[in-house]
Image 1: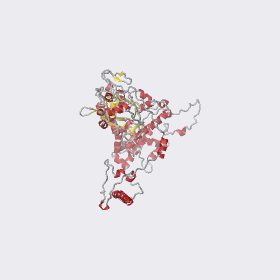
Image 2: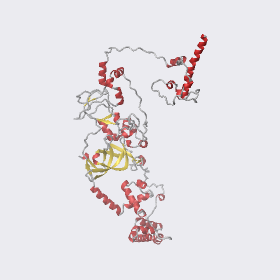
Image 3: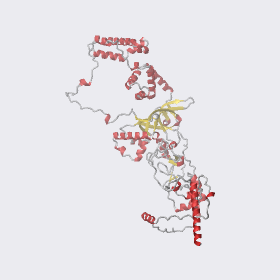
Image 4: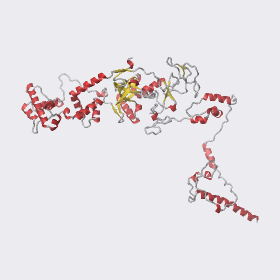
Length: 631
């Protein structure tokens, strides 16, 4: 019952997507809506996978500096797996608030500010434990160190001097180290000091009556007298009395110098009504984070002025009224809410009703009690669970092939899956247990950052890898597999499978059919004839000594062609549709105009006609020579 009761200030998991990791939030308020539902106003925490790679580099640099300051050898000696899992425990605080339905709460967790004295490995030993040391601004995309860190350590300790012995003098000049601002043993009595303070208040009230800006802010005499009775007036009066050596006559004369009465104002009186409203609005949003208040709301005020105004504002009736209003609102708001356990099945959960057929070489028989492990032994699941038959793919995180429940993970075209333990780790910590093969890759089913082939994209949309590429590999098929491709083409349907590359192929059925169709093979394999291959140098020398012979001239056609009947060919592109055309016989240089000896003035069709005429003229002249010889 207590585990399902959530209160203000609890760190909880929220689920906004069935496939993405859980969100980590801190409950600030619990409000009941008009339709009866409960909404939680929460502070957002971000994971490493939620911020850009540039900010991750800054976070890593900050972590390295922190390791050097801590001087903890255990952190340096951690194995790579634990360093990888420790990155999943790091969060980034933000000032962003959002409202989420309380029904989306999926459990509690623990988030603490990282302390320099504690070991980071302790977070790995505790479940649902996270830490943060940096503050992330989602709007400005910045990452800053949290100003609320606990300063514990050797460098924050004071250097204590040795204790002085009995009767030993202190060598320091005490007059230079302190300043006396009031003497309680003066010649004035308490009554005389009170009378002087009344005179100082009267002078302050008169000074406000003469000042135009003060008369606008405090139009009535009561307001001017109240402003003149503030601490700033009394402090100035006592400082004046001490500076004049507690001489009443000189002190009163100092209150009214040559130019008129002295007017003393504090921050409460200097600030306008609009500035006071801005301060109250900023205090509601940021709390006592005066640096953010100055930066976002009051940049024209100094940090000292804002802090001084805050402590004066706490003494006013305005602060008391706001405190009463907040207490009344807190009474009307919910203190806690009960959220039952979420037991609905996840949409990414793979169905257990899978036929135990052999797909892609996966093993499994019907009627097994547990899932089949790597060594062939059945691994039982939790009580009452039905084991999932093996589908031939191991878990993407721990590489196990046995689990009582499987979940699809990653892009759908990759067909990746996680076991039940790794799925729980993924949902809680936003990563995989084992380091990924790609250095720096942040895995996950974030399909906005994936290409159609499951490769991570940069923010610019380029499908290039931002990290190292995958290792090259090739598939070497056996002789029987190559034979089965040709023998069982009607079963494999290579054209259909090429267009559907993600469909599974029942290799067991193909092997069985191929064994039936092939003739009886000899019991002993035929010996292979060894082939001696010559080295490359000898092949190169042979090719240099025996160059390729030139092609003979094409056969000439008889008859003569009259030039009068020739017409130029129409200038239309010649398409090579498989028939050997003239363009198809020309070399690459001729196609691209790289032969320098050839004239480029003639058009291609006139060039072809000239070639035809020269071929026609040559046989006629040879016939005439033969006739003269016969005569």
